[in-house]
Length: 98
Image (cartoon, rainbow, N blue to C red; front, side, top):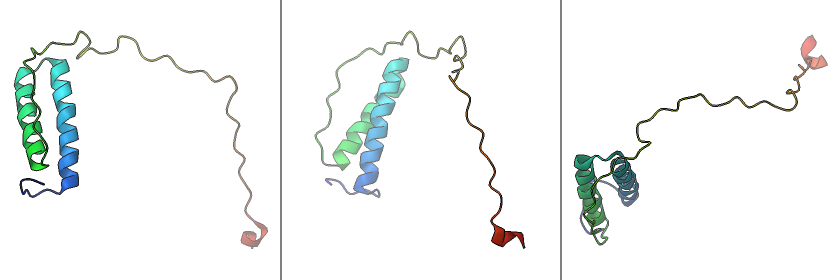
């Protein structure tokens, strides 16, 4: 690790993965403020791990047409072709009946 921090290398890798997820989510939501925060977080974590910092392109955040939408109809119920077999209860063993 290039810089010392209070976190282990595994924790830093996990945080980097999480930061990339947050970046992609902010990009899909069109949240420019959150994009900047995630970019800085990604680059600081990469520096801690001794990696080359990512050079982000100038991207205008676009709002996804499906972002924030709820499903209009509930999921259809799946019907089984045959009913589940009923489980039989086992009687206790003869030794336990005393």
